[in-house]
Image (tube, rainbow over all chains, first blue to last red; front, side):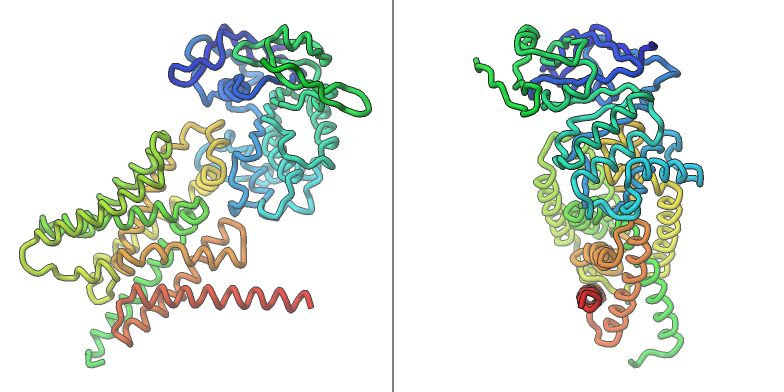
Length: 248
Length: 274
């Protein structure tokens, strides 16, 4: 299995404040990795580094080109990132996922619109494809932005807290869709809801200044504390329940 | 009106062309400003440009050129601050807003003798609009149409979700700076029509009328130009007949149009439901 990118002894942060300290991390094709860790632990910083939005203080990110170019990563940002009252339609948002191929003066061809139609029907958005974003529910928005992330057929999909979209009726569909996509692309999903994602991901990366890779979807409190990863753990089972750990 | 027919004819042509170009430039710029929520910023740019008008008077250079320099510089300055997020943006705009007005007043009072047409810069005027102003506005219309037509998707997507655009493009800041400069120039050119105090409404009311009917960016631009023309032409006509500064009559006509559209749309919707 070919690797998609390798992070090598990388340190990153803002001004003098170090958020990620000398981490190593490799993501390969068909990986489905849940990125967990406390708030402020560096999850978002990790995504910014991978996307190239933040320059590392030291160390490097190496992409396995031409299999994956940095600009071709499929990216689903956090819900609050965009302005959902902006006058733009579902189809136009999905088409924006093709802009990297288009350049600044790009126009959308019939071919591009075909790609958009395919994504729209794949995600069940036909009825709302001409609607402005203002009229959509949280779950619909989530699928629209997923459409934007995957229309370019990326080899890597980055998801930043997709569980924040709060629309439980679509949640299961959403994860099923991710499994399907995982056959074609590696997935890296930032989440604070370990319980929900542990039944979907193949492995975990725990980020809290350091990065610890955990190669199975099963994770215990003991392992978390060993990783120095102070997060809530929700146990599996028919009725999910939260195990609260002692706080320091 | 006592004016001769040739003068009146020339005057009507000038007013009509002015209305067409003002509505094209204000419609395009207004859609960008309203959808990106830059109305307050645009108000700041407009008033900051008054400093340039004052310096223009004082030095004897064209006041509109001074205004353009001030407007573009303050637009770039505020966009730079927002890109680098080092300062509270709304406070910066508020300071710039008042500073521009203060500089303008200081230099106008320092200018010896009578300052002609000062009122026309504050509230707009058709009488003082020159052929050169109309031509400049015409050229700006063409520039804006070409710029928005060629880079439509890039402008749309950066406005909508700048953070996402940064993941695939390294030209986001370049486009933000170029576009906001064009917006500043549009504002200054329209000051000749509607005046410093009222020009912001010329930019913001038409897109808001358009958004009653459509939520698509391209259509908002088109409808802004159409409704902007209706309001501007009607305002000019009343200004001409009643001898009131056009800035005031245009804004009044546009607001009236907005209320009428809103009422009609609501009524039609209600009737459909019944």
